[in-house]
Length: 222
Image 1 (cartoon, one colour):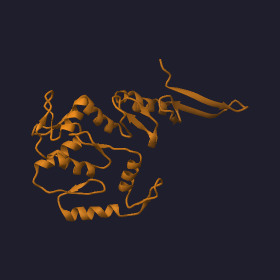
Image 2: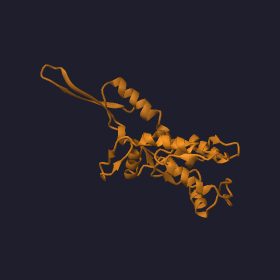
Image 3: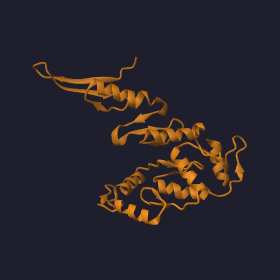
Image 4: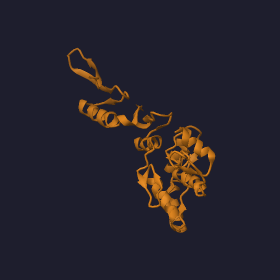
């Protein structure tokens, strides 16, 4: 049976333990007690074995896809990504189209509505009225966040986070139609508008449809 942890202890002359470190052998994270180490092993590694390799911890933690080089700091994002590899689309619209994640289904359902939505360019949140969007934008104007890499000043925390994700090449939003990934939800929404055209090219194996032959080629390679 594989040992889940190892002890590093330093004893003083009196025989008292001066330092005890419990290190996870999977990601090298240090825990303060055996109980916390066991909880960490179960929640972060045993329950998530199906997610593949997990490296780092805290802000450096990454969940790695077992079928391609893709990696993400969020386990749910990897689950959505793996569904594309496995052909799983558990979220269904009444029109017959299905998706790998609920947010994609919600965005798709809005295409059936005649209501015009105004999208925040910072966080992707949508509003039915222009004045509601204008009011919302004020929440992004407080403070300035400097980038430690390029020294650029960002006006809000969400824009700062998106900016840093670009530096780190983290794309958590992916297009259901072509697999292209994006840093922000608003970028994905704008991209998906390109797919709202007649899809005449169809996969003879599963019925997948697209408007571009290159998308079909990408689909067939998955």
